[in-house]
Image (cartoon, rainbow, N blue to C red; front, side, top):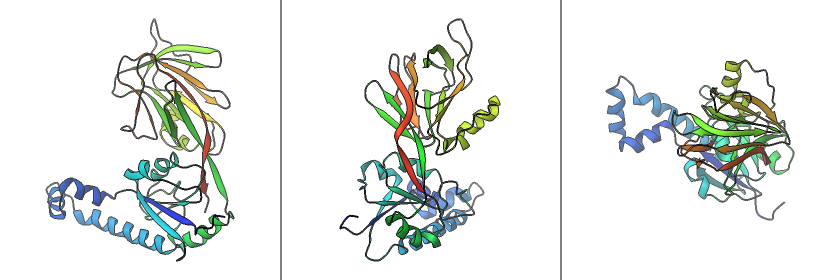
Length: 297
């Protein structure tokens, strides 16, 4: 263990109340905006206050001689995580994938501050249990789930990581055009894009696709595997629909863009954090070497 005291890094995102204030400048303007639409600010404010109270209790669970840091989601790309950190994510499940790509093996504890609001699929720890879990995590005496991540690597060297899924397609409602290749099979396609999902992501966006196409593909959150799905492939003289979905293990999915403009790749639903994927660019999708070490409560 490092000679330094352990550091707990709390990660949060803005509450709906804070986002309202950022847009409307003052509490009174936010109240007027909602009231003019038949809504009450008190409901949003009450949830904000409950969240802040839970965060305060969580931070008080850290031993007095340990170090602490607090980073917001918007600042993650500028924050320097240390190998010895314990990461405590306080908020909704979607915040976990936002953090995962910035980590390199640190244990992650997901705390659900509002159990009546958030599902708690990834944030499963109760605030009251945090002190014991932190002690155990530093002592490496906890059960850790090694959640598989997906990696998208472009021929330019640009790289994206995803805990849930990668999207490859067009940034608008236009058709995505590309060549897709897996094993020895290759096909030019026109579709609504490709989703490459992990076992963690298989309960989200990918699940709705599987239900729509009646796929029984099974993939667990710790399985060293990915699933890919082509959304609404369109048959034509120059495009086919034979490659629709499949599972990746040690193999890769190779995709070459045939889009003159508007081609994008983004991870975990963050559309604004995209990489351009225009004509001729080549992409490989595979299982990432790193995984998320999620502490099980």
